Length: 280
Image 1 (tube, helix red, strand yellow):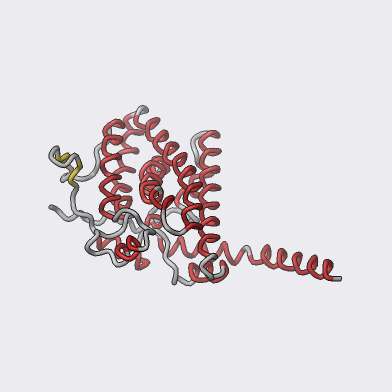
Image 2 (tube, helix red, strand yellow; image 1 turned 135 degrees about the horizontal axis):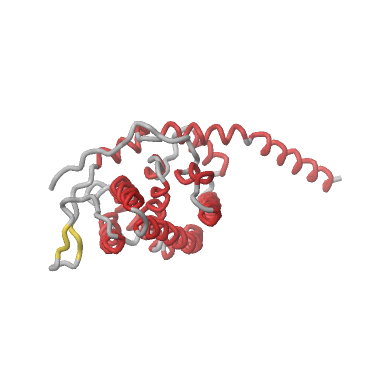
């Protein structure tokens, strides 16, 4: 099986907290803009749900935010890729959120209650995100030849990073065995990746797009698609901070945190004032 050449780009659009943010001011219609705003609001909420679940383990939210900003905490590698065209917003919804759903639905029944309960609402909202992404691509693929080419280009660039979202292969995954033993994870990385491929390839065919994998082939004996080798060095590079947008995305996060200091200080002063009043 061939080894895929890295498709990383050296350029990146204006750094944003998430790939979609760069397109809020450039959405093609008011309806698309409103939908994208709703999606971004949902995603911010997901972060809050998961921070709240993590706080039940005894670590403060302030510490978790500090760990993110200083690089100690990791976040999904997929957020370090640029969204260079409107078709990317469709591909992110269809592929990235689709992969997230495939990962997260089993977590709704995981052994840790706060995590499980957060995932129930997250999965409902991610389902909407996936549908809006697919709808964007349906519109583009039924448009002009240029629009369909834009959709194909987005698929070419987001397909492999989306497969990497499931994590390393089972034999190379450091944490899967323990997570499975604790019943945090219910399916292995490779099992979830295979489910995603089996569901998504027919959707690409419906759109009239070609999955960018010359080794992709349906195996009638197993009922699954065989796929080409994933370039795990790209995955390692992105996790190490050397992806297309790592530095820009982290710089944006740090700036947003610094710019919001006055809000936190004002809220703290307000709380202290009312606490003192109540105590008097």
